[in-house]
Length: 168
Image (tube, rainbow, N blue to C red; front, top):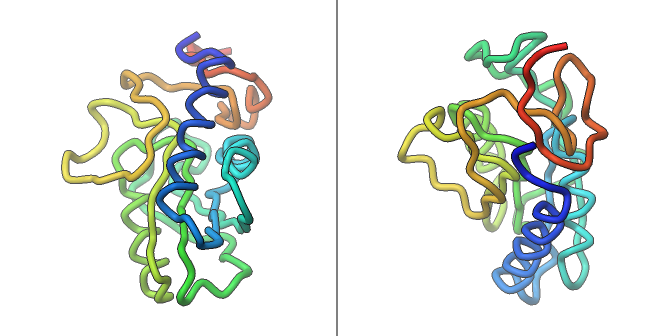
């Protein structure tokens, strides 16, 4: 186990408080990247004070592999109009930053008022140093992890903690 359930709860509340402060007086639109962000975004929206809306994008950059293919495809677009909105893009984990960079550009083209980024996990040694993520839950070693929404071939998403995946 790398991150306990209690640590996730505490850090999620801290991030929610920071988003509440940063976007005081606004109704943030959280956009989760499916499927891995589902549990995190559900807990995060409850940790934000005041009104909040959510939407989802589905992308593919891994396929059935444990490393990115380097090609990002949008499988499901957002349903809401985001022009003029304060958007927080919510990721489960950031590795190389390829998907996050692609989605930032994609969303910025839709002319939101602001786009902030939030990642539950940042994998050390895998992301580019110039990647600026506004809200990060935890920085982890370059191991493949499961739990709290993250999977290995669709298994282990339901674990309430984050653990290193060593195979079945």
